[in-house]
Length: 200
Ligand code: K1U
Ligand code: ZN
Image (tube, rainbow, N blue to C red):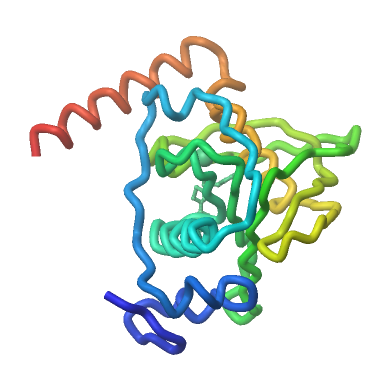
């Protein structure tokens, strides 16, 4: 189905504009999200070498998939694409404008010494949450869809989310910060969930 500006079926479509305009008027697709454990979630993703129309479509699909889940971030390995691209929108207030971000080859260049504990979740580990300690602030550089190099200092939930998403690009999940028992318990729950899903 083609989605256009102001589509009433999914208001999230109206959030995607600017450099994504090409993909926005084209057919956008929800991509299935991989569930842990999956070897594709453990692999280090490959750098983006060029901004192509295919990449713009991938970015638009990722935003659509993230808003639909719903989530505040998504990394390409979570949809089985081993490329260094993440999307995020951590705007929480219903009346605030959305802020969809697409980050290509993101790199953390600085982190604060002070840390923040956040009860993280993951779209690849549904319904499981655990406290993770990370730097409160993180400066990140990336390339945008216009090929510009961008840098921003993220704070609070944005900083937590961008670090969580960049971890995905390096094959790391939030459960890797937990002790082995808790990690194993969550992994077993996910294996059971996948068996049940496969049975239908
Ligand atoms: O990468 C992912 O799996 C997405 C993940 C991002 C994230 C969540 C919490 C802390 C760090 C990173 C999610 O979006 S899980 C869903 C979620 O947190 C959420 C969903 C709807 C509204 C608000 C939050
Ligand atoms: Zn995740």
